[in-house]
Length: 523
Image 1: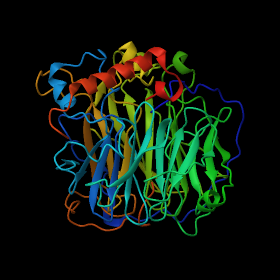
Image 2 (image 1 turned 120 degrees about the vertical axis):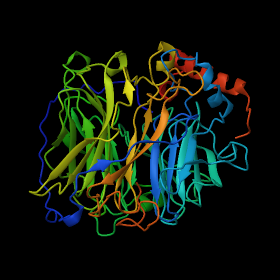
Image 3 (image 1 turned 60 degrees about the horizontal axis):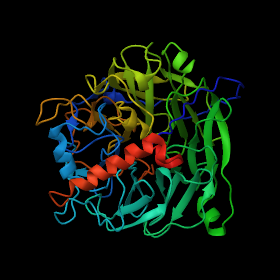
Image 4 (image 1 turned 90 degrees about the vertical axis):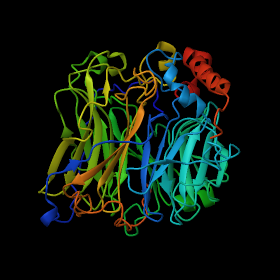
């Protein structure tokens, strides 16, 4: 979840940048048709869809989708949910939501023996902050947090069953995952005490070591570079939002050796100057050669600015030397929460939410249509960069404010249904897939606004993919499967007690009112 603080630091220092030399821009041939995305698919009409993580599993040949259970992602009226959303309370299990799909059209809830739970509550408890990754053995990992614990759990069959895990890999807020060799995964979080740290599990998530490597100020999606020949092969990499007016990454080299010996250190490297940052953390990705991509939205003037900000991107081969920052989009309105996925070198997709008007303070906004935008960029780092920007959602996915204040949003009655971010990934052909919440679907019972966002799935069905293949709708997406270039990428009981649901909401509201501090106030 996002921290409540803003990143408003003004530019103070200039950073040297070195352009990267990559292969010539790819030739797409018959794949050069216009980039296009299909109509959004509703994953589930009942369960919540805030802060979703989406993943294509190349081993088990299916999509996996996971989202926040909705407990602290409520409508403006806070605890007073519309009656039609009682079905969400009925399905509540204090576990993040998980679905799987073979074709991206029909989605099935993960269900443990008809209980409504995805996995045994003995190794999976926590309604918030999912994140998906996969190790070299094909095991997929996910995480969920409660008000005191960060659970870590894993699936051997593409998300259908989750047979291993621990309730408490560590305490703290906003865990991010990165998987490596078979049965090895790392969890990064903000502990309740101490600095942001990264913990390791070598038994498929059944336990986590007691040694965590600190990366003060690190915050965002974690990656493990498993690309042999890469300059950072074997390193853990995560974004660092604020380095005295600059943005960058933290790198722990030779991660496996560092945890084995108990020695090692995250080193932070600046990438670019910023004019503040509208969202709590930037996003990073690695392409199939191990190049790092970093994206963020600036925030010139903060809440006192004009609301016209920019989506930026930069890239590095080694984490030390970066390309000049590149303006992905500057629409003259407000843009926020960018996320990125990459394919072969130079090819990346950046997605973000975009207001149709300048909105200097999205938290407090009461008007403004919000659309889901996507930019496909090809040949970045060469002299032949191509970029296509489209409205991937086709229509607004939200109207009004997007509260980024964690559980305090519940206490203040602000709209937090979307949460703090949404994600993209690529399928077997390198075509972009997107997961997001959408608040524009009405409650099926009352016909009014839903108290939680609806999970939607969007897939690129036209134009070149990020690996040079065609995403044309005439080619198969659900029947022809294979490993994407580079192989694996790191990148319940019906009628469950509504009292438990009410208790969790009450606890979240209490946290928002300041009864607890630190990580517990940002769930």
